[in-house]
Length: 139
Image (cartoon, rainbow, N blue to C red):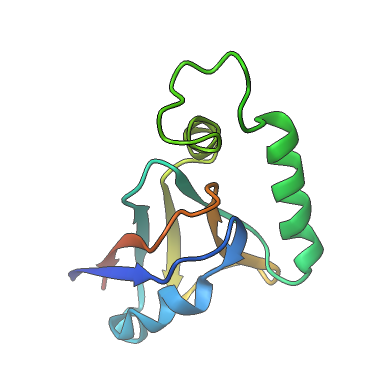
């Protein structure tokens, strides 16, 4: 079985946001899958996806502070500056984390670890709504 759908996320503020529930809710077909994979792909270059701690909001805030320290906005060495002080930094952060996740499916559910959740990593101050391509395969 193959199934693909587009998930349109509302605009989130800059930061790391748990979106596991939104992803699962967009895929009622998940419940009928015994074994398979879910591929999640973000169709943007200034936001990314990652899988990490789903319990403590402090983890998400620490991610944001760490990435801002590693790749600061308005770094004087940036050449691509036409789209705002946060744009080039957002592209670099998105490249470091990546645009996709491939997750196992078992018995109609994502087979995530107890403390794992899917993050939308919004790297822009005004990133706007985001689109995800969700591709489900399995039996």
